[in-house]
Length: 136
Image (cartoon, rainbow, N blue to C red; front, side, top):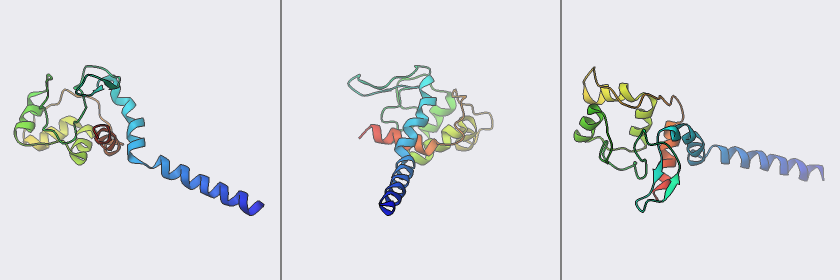
């Protein structure tokens, strides 16, 4: 009986650890920080995740060109999009870690600035995985 309880406890711990390590689940939790400025609204207008309007709608952000939707983007982000930056999980994670530094590197312009002042120091790849999963 004690062996059965030990085995159950071990399996529970591993199941919980693997669930917590899922990037989409972690990203959904981390995205709470982003909802101050961003919402996720699908093409039909259905709100998938409530949020602010200070930032652009992030529905289907993975796979689209930077600054390609209707929004007041910074000149630097518009230039990055025009130069071919397309948001994938790696690019988006790098951007949210330090938006202005990212744009300085991508544009080669030391004065490039992003309107997004928040820096997500960790969890950017998880947020990108979450955003990618929303559009499926």
